[in-house]
Image 1 (tube, rainbow, N blue to C red):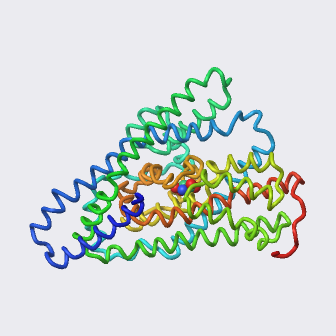
Image 2: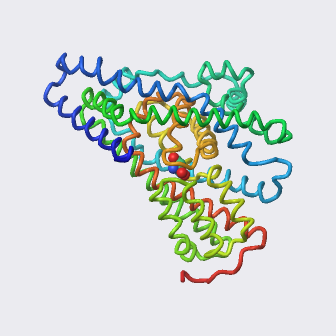
Image 3: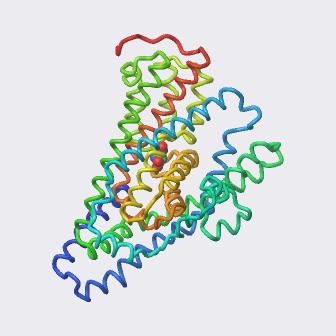
Length: 423
Ligand code: ASP
């Protein structure tokens, strides 16, 4: 049985078991012992196994992600265009997500008492968000992002600073003579591989851990604590749909292509992305369709789509942004406007650092949550429903890559005319 099905079963077992126990036993000491000594430790162990590899993962994924963009000096016009386009459009997708989540507040449907006890029961207290100070907020954020000592930043869980350091290492690699830094790249690739295997091992525990985490949650607070989860899923899917139908339509329209024609031609790409949940696995289909059905020149298609499959992940960025805010609402962590701007930045970065594989964004989720002061254990809540969201965001990731290729081809004056109608 595929892992995601088992995790979903874990979710159902945990929620049903926990809610029933709550109804049957209430605050009986026996149930309290079960949650304190059995289910909670199982969930926490799983989370700690993931936390354990967060720093090496972040470092290797981001450094390799940027280094993989190629030599900055020779990347040239097309590279720069693709990268800028990607940053802007990913930014738009995150803003759409954040607007929806602020509007509908899916995580806020909890009684104040439940939230208060939730806060008390946080098992992994997150580092407090930066204290308000009289210093200029822009300056403060800049100082938070640039570490004076990367090791100390890592030890103190200052994820933004670690991200910045990793990005700079990636840029340094890209600017160095390849022969000299090749061994270092191999070390990073090795580290990344090892981390992936460790996450795989931890993920084998996931069905049980999700069951345990949700049992603990519902046994303590009752089934109503789960309602926000459905609202959250609706917001993610709504945001993705909006970005897909509005933003992409406007962009292809700007490039002189009828949106109906565009979506009809790339239908196959979207269904492949949905069924595989992987941008990498969809790359061959995307390459073929972009050239054969949209007439994008081969050099542009292969460059933009390959780069995009890892570095241009609009759907993933939107998902990360919504998830951070949802969990902040859920745990009652107040995110100021300044912190929300940070959320946009880290979500866009996550779009660059996420591997185009099923569930690729989950490992990065934990450090990102912690960077804005939300307990990393929140990941346990969303893990159970992630597969369906993963399938949906991957559609956006890949459609976003094809849209980028259309844009770049158009801006280079190399997009062949297409029918003015949907046909
Ligand atoms: N599954 C996504 C992709 O391949 C990555 C993720 O967001 O998990 O594009």
